[in-house]
Image 1 (tube, rainbow, N blue to C red):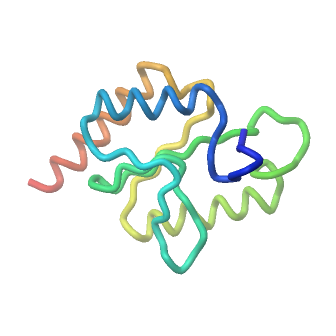
Image 2: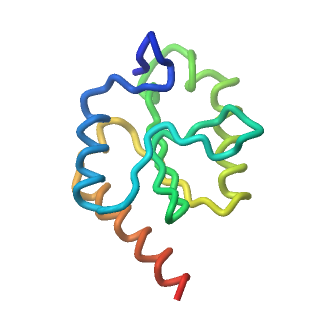
Length: 121
């Protein structure tokens, strides 16, 4: 769910808690709504820029109406964004809001950081 005053600011309680947990557990720069491409208005929901890890929160996947990101246009825009991220060397992890504060999600993010670190060596 987006904030009416700032469409890029998630108002979901899980989202704020998720950001806090990431900052505490990962001890790295965690950037909400990160603009990764100056030529485009695309934003990463949560970025770990040092590792080029993009965490995308897929809201609306359980909606029956095809609006926003769940619409055909929204899906196509998201595909374009994810492909651009991959082209620019980012790893994209996608989660629904109900998965944000699960230990398995945090473990997958940590594992992805370890993979990136091992490739740097």
